[in-house]
Length: 387
Image (tube, rainbow, N blue to C red; front, side, top):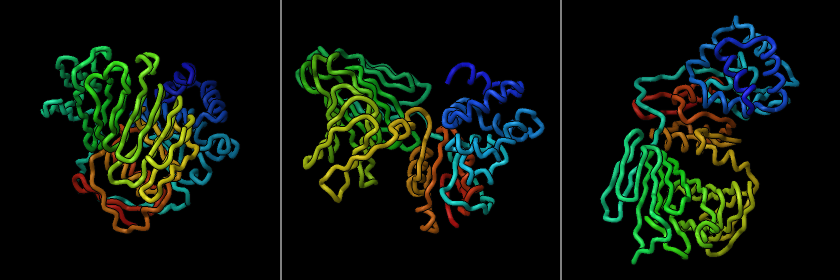
């Protein structure tokens, strides 16, 4: 997205957009930039700002944009602004004030939630570091930690030990991310790892010179940006899990391997990786995803949008034809909340949408409620869903 468009969007929300800029924004949207528009708004504007613009129906630019709701050409040009969703929206901004979200089938019943007490908060940067002697350190946003070759900024854990320094025996650290947390770690070889909620990784404090660099994703989800083997004396890099091994030379990929799920997803963003489960192996190309299940020794591979799969790393959750049950798993981990589904049939409802990780849980549920017959109650940190 160029600076000109960013400025126009900012002017729109500051109520300073001109008629010329409004036409330019609409033309840009017609070119198929709906995804960019949504992501930029979600990441850069607060819910309060969006609501304020949404409620200002007299705003000239608002009126011009809102009039485009019935423009079928615009509907075709922007995939996320599906015509079957227009009937639920008064304006374009409704799509983005909690992200965009729609059901794959139409249902316009509206139900008011029963909120007794809401203690659910969005996740933040936090982790538990377990040192080689077994002691633990709580890492939290805004708090720094320094020990020998280890430094935490409160958002990132950095290891500065040189790879060329050979130790008599390899020592390991563990980094555990609780529900409602995320963290970024830079290993001693400069490999970067982003860990999602409810994840745990084991890694050497210092990699041995000339030997394969190996880390273990014990459970959860992690995004790896691996330091190239050419920068590490030709040493390969492996990520092992009890059900698979991923070998790389220098690349970016995402592994999702939660303990409460029976599938492991490895998605390649850049480079080449070899996935091996002991019975089968597959070499992945960018935008390919391997799937390992408990019921088969074969590794299946499918084409995906790798950036969408790893969007959580950039502060956005994206879903495409995803069951309500799977979405609730993601929400439960990030918002550290408990979920009870009274009517199990709603778990199979399919959704497509996106939302920012900083959003209030009520804002996300509000739009789902507006578009479906799914009702919910919030009591402390528990949400109960029903028809």
